Image (cartoon, rainbow, N blue to C red; front, top):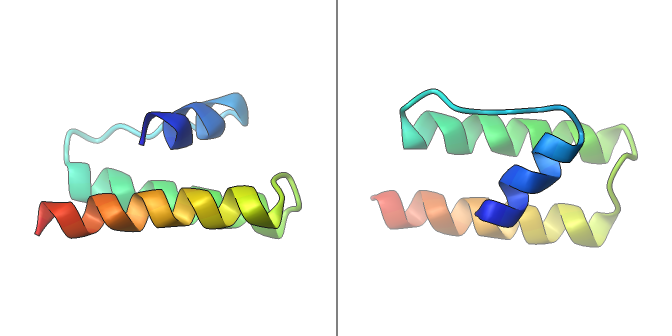
Length: 60
């Protein structure tokens, strides 16, 4: 999770709403945008997505 936050921060996106589930959804959206804009490669995108979705599952 920390690595995903740092990746987003590196690209100028800081997500913090005090609601973990909302943060995870926003981070996933940002990650998708970075991939669509070709700012990150496919492997980085997939790893980040896996981390975020595992965190989302652990909330439930």
